[in-house]
Image 1: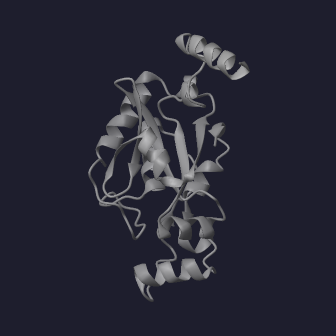
Image 2 (image 1 turned 120 degrees about the vertical axis):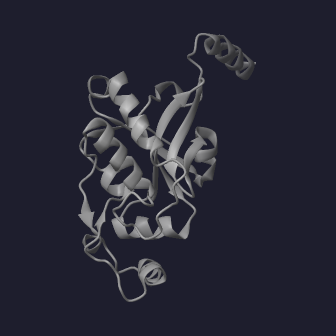
Length: 205
């Protein structure tokens, strides 16, 4: 009886937009979504950056639906539902720029989307080069915010600055570079972005 009552109330509240999927009503254009990817590369990134998150994308809403603009193979838009399902245990976290309403005006968001469109369809960068020819997930997010909004989310670092001692990380580096590891290459990871003081947590599941 109690469950039926709760369900009935939920149905009523849903019509008033109070009973949405957890976190959905809070999502805004430009929010960042982080996940634990199933890929071996993301696992190496998590270990090297001491973070549980190895992948990140930008949330936008179009036609009443949420999607994530992400650098996979290739750079593309993925429905939010599919993005979450692709993560390890469907776990994810959403972060938002502080003072977002003041900083991400409609004009700024339009520029960010325009910058993102320049990367759409490009191949994923397995070698983490800091060029626009190919691109990886956190690089995509950083460049869209930098070039579209003039905001640097996360401090750029060098490959040598990360913890490269793990066996998983060392094997991935050898697989990618052989003996010529570009330790001075400019790099940004999901951990550098999620730990930025410019962001605040919206939702984590």
